[in-house]
Amino acid sequence: MKKELRNPLEESIKNRLKEERYQISEKKKEKQRVSFVQLLLIVVMGIGLVASTVQLLIKLFS
Image: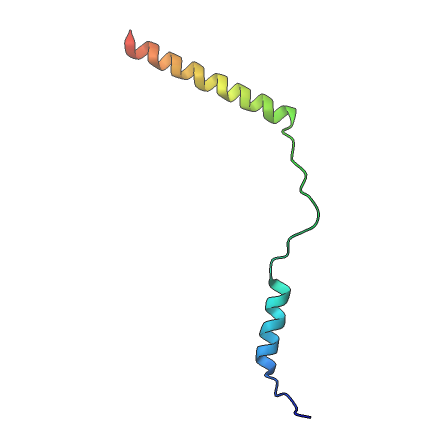
């Protein structure tokens, strides 16, 4: 029987790469819901943006 010569450095590198490789998880990710406070903040910011744009246009054209 021939004895295979093994390079310890190469084996170490291969083992580390095997451990670090990305593995696809079997668990499905749950969709995060937007909380009421976040939704309220988005709506208020949108209203403020529209109102400030309207005021700016009124000042420019008057």
